[in-house]
Length: 135
Image (tube, rainbow, N blue to C red; front, side, top):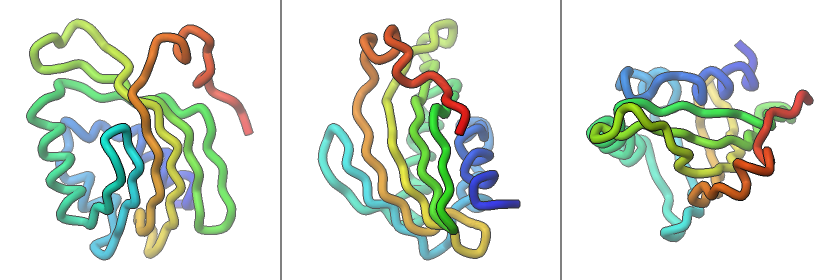
């Protein structure tokens, strides 16, 4: 599987329903450098596992729409939006956040990541700012 296919498969994977995906997709020595609306943090493998375990407790479903997916060697850049259905309101899907991520792939797993995210807003959704672009 190419690095680009791996990242695409990861973002399209149902992480809420399949906890094993962290082991399947993340390198044991991975690091994610994440600038979010709450500040900067560096997550290692265990912190990423904890993050997804917390997601599993609060969301019924998560879905990702990828607008850009670019490859340069072992580096993959993705621009995407995550949508979710909470446990409390399983009938309504809402946009949660917009992301731009750069992943280095090592041993066919996500190894080094740099990610920027911000809460989703209706203006970007209405303007189709995150609609898929074929590259």
